[in-house]
Amino acid sequence: MRAIGFDEIGGPEVLRTVEVPTPRPGPGEVLVRVAYAGVNYAEVQHRLGDFGPPSPLDIPGMEASGQVAALGEDVSGLAVGDPVAVYLPDGGGYAEYAVAPARFTFPLRTPSGEIGLRTAGGSALVLPTAYGVLAAAARLRAGDSVLIHAAAGGVGSVAAQLARALGADTVFGTVGSADKAEYAKRFGYDAVFPREDFPDAVRDATGGRGVDVVLDPVGGPTRLASLDVLAPFGRIAFYGEAARHPDLNLPLLPLWKNNRGLTGYNIGDVSRRAPDLLRAHALAALELVASGGVHIDVTDVLPLAAAARAHERMQAGLNVGKTLLAVRGEE
Image (cartoon, rainbow, N blue to C red; front, side):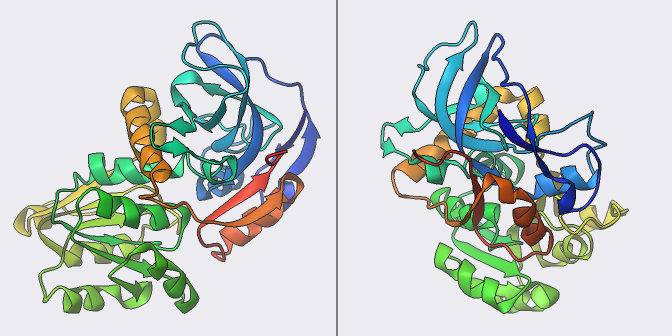
């Protein structure tokens, strides 16, 4: 089968088209004929070596959509030909076929309606991440105010909508450029601020109180500054390190003295230690998409062979919404 892989750490140019054997599903696994693969910043980090070197050839791609092509032993509730979205904790989505754990294979025919393959191609990582960081890590409560960094990205654009669905009263965002601010506003943000001076803007918008929840995939100075905009008993939920800054070394006493909290969300850890919770989050969020309550905005669809171009744009911070690779499309 045709796939995109890399066998050395480096820039987007290390991604290349390869021919590899079609995988076979083992017990508890599903083989999916991929229609669309989502592109995520974690895959850029993978290529850059943040998660270790390739061994020996890695095929990136942590989310995809397509049709069930074959079922491994002990898999029930699915049939060959079913349209599905899949979360791929070990990658493999940038390919014509991918093997997914059955528990992370999500039917696209829901009680509220059917989700199209194009929309679903960018759902199986983004939706459980956004839902999980809000509901589980941040423990969002009805009436909370929320600040979401990277408001125009794949997670940020759905997190604003999910925060509303989960009861948030006020939702703010930050972005790195003015054009991204205009884009982000379509997802229901009350206000979107430039990231370089967001603390004063948040304090002004909240009358000095601050916000109850901050979602941060950026890290570094953004994370540090976010501490100062927390309301009493506010919490920062961080779920990435897109800026690739060195880790922060924070004293704990100011957290105690200022009633602040820090919490993390990592979908890989959830997939290993709480897989049923990940599945529950994904299904709940997909139901909101099927009912029209949440919109996944696919802004760019590139051919599989253009994966390097998709990575280049994402690494440069030029992307908004969801970028997909069309593997087979909806042929």
